[in-house]
Image 1: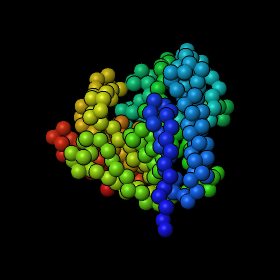
Image 2: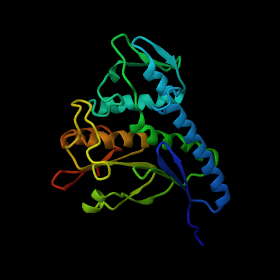
Image 3: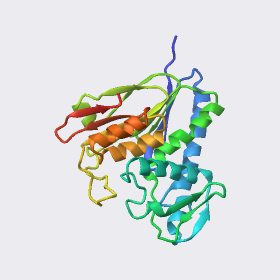
Image 4: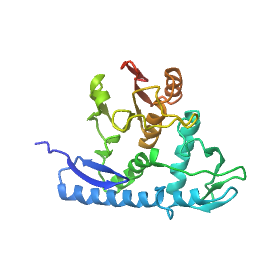
Length: 266
């Protein structure tokens, strides 16, 4: 008889993380989930902008022309943010338009800093949860657990090892008929106005994003899906189509102001 996957939850990064493991042994699954949650807590201490002693906090305290040695996690997360910054024409920007282009990375020496032109405050919260999901997949390998769902607050979810049918969630998804998706070895991330209103700020204008009511991105990387769903809230349909074409494993769902659901890359 097929057993039900085991689910465990944990509070971190101002949200609830959930780990669902498809295995017969619940106690073994619990121990694996505990290891995953401990690692997520460690990542929060490294990447939180609210902790001045974290790698990200230290980067924000630097002056123009200064650099600091950081861990590989901060470098990896910043590199993903830089990928998203370039892919979206600056619409995903962890400095909200105040100078991400001045940040320099020396991966060989594990240093990050600002060039002489200026500095800014860095907030990796837009991809931090997704990055955490991607990062802890290595622990699943260590525990020989291949079939899992990793969920960060319901806004970003990573499905691994087999096909999982997942609820999209949120009033806009329900209203436009996007109730669920089936994923395998991919992540789904969503952004919208239904919970916090127009809280996403366009870094190029400094004004709330109003182009779409909601947006979802599917990508093999949870961190990249995280970043793209945010940027899709501000991007014209044609630019989303061009991005999905350049990244063939990317799918976008966008709810227009007239409540029309647009599917791109499906």
